[in-house]
Image 1 (cartoon, rainbow, N blue to C red):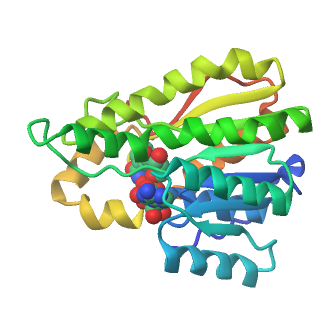
Image 2 (image 1 turned 90 degrees about the horizontal axis):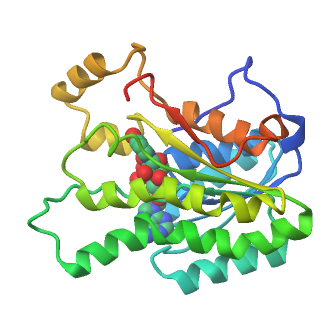
Length: 260
Ligand SMILES: NC(=O)c1ccc[n+]([C@@H]2O[C@H](COP(=O)([O-])OP(=O)(O)OC[C@H]3O[C@@H](n4cnc5c(N)ncnc54)[C@H](O)[C@@H]3O)[C@@H](O)[C@H]2O)c1
């Protein structure tokens, strides 16, 4: 799914040449974020598990004449592998000023079915990678004299969405990560914010969950009639990475068409 930049979309001069690291950037919202940064002339690096989709994204961005994104196959559940990918990206490209913690999986499960192993695995994909990505990238941000960390939260748990209790726990902790690091990172002019999407029509969401009931729920709960697209989330991420948001930190920015 291409997210070609609409002609009237904002240009952020401060993003040109910026190095941006994205987790789970191969498909969905992450891919829209990768593409949107590339269209702003940023140098993007991302990790993902989806090999064919990630390579197709890079090919598409490169063919459009933008700086080819750096990417590596990496399972973020393996913290050592994630740290190794980040170290390699820094070595090849230089220090990153922006980190986008996007990776997650909203697989459905019941409370009754959760074992300690399943719990740990859910946290390993939905919670743990953000902390260790920040830990790995902050030294470079300090060397650069500042940076911006953007953590993808969710409105799902805030609107009492059912069917994914482990995901809800992990996603609710994103605000804690943002708030808990904002003061110490702020001393180094590193900003950290949460972007919480509503229900975004990625291919995965359409394929797995958008049925007649879902359509009805969207209509009843959103204030705006249109369906959220991945680019709507990418737009907020661009703003938070740019100098236009220079004094925004420790906040949650919700993009949900007024659902929550
Ligand atoms: N789509 C929505 O409606 C929605 C709503 C609220 C919040 N969000 C949040 O937005 C972010 C992106 O969501 P999305 O809907 O685009 O997700 P998605 O599942 O469509 O894409 C996530 C990406 O992460 C990759 N990935 C999954 N597991 C991985 C692993 N172990 N290692 C490396 N890569 C892995 C996938 O291959 C995929 O490219 C997530 O943080 C999600 O919680 C999404």
